[in-house]
Length: 320
Image (cartoon, rainbow, N blue to C red; front, side, top):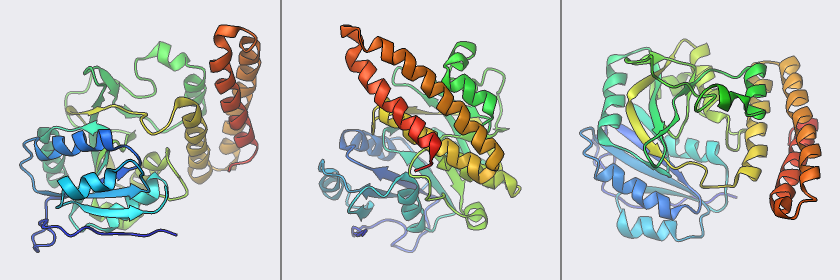
């Protein structure tokens, strides 16, 4: 059962003045990152008006209390458990009415110029269903740009880590040859502005995705319906990334999202091929980590890798 609590606030929306855009953040025991993220929003020199909705997925770290004490103007949607990222984002979007909605990870630091640029671009580009920019690591180095929609060859390069050797940030593309806003495949929802009219046409995030894959699926549907997704290389957001779960648990969730995307959008033959590919590679990894397990210095990591790859093999046999 999900319970919702909307905090009283004095936002533009409640005063009857529609903000230029709405910002939706999902929180799950991430208070130490949520607070700096909000500070970057309110102190970032944004010229465009905005309101903020935080959807809390049953945090127990004091996130709700911090929001109510320090950000009384924010709308809070309180879930009594973790309902997943896609569903929580939808709850936040449904609670807003502005013409554009920004999906923003709470482990980000934004700058006002980038968000203003997103809204300005949307207002001047009627075929844009979504727009995003470049994600940076904490030290300012490149983290992610734009990506093509998945192929079996790409998934092989990702799973074997060969792609990382071929190109920095793989499967994301660097923007060395892009100087202007450019239509692309898909962008991370760590910082992604969506057009309300486009969402009304194609629907919101598919809640069958608990986490991972939902943003690619939405942008695939946008483009299937004639909308474009644009990449603005000059708009940057700092994204810490990976703060909600470790890489061993994340692997299964990422692969689940990939298989679901293939099932929905590519059909049973390609979905089956992806299962064979990922399951087969995990069996190879099991053999390798099984050998490493006998080495005392590798035992802890090997145990985690073995459990993680066993979970992937089970997933490939049956999508959970």
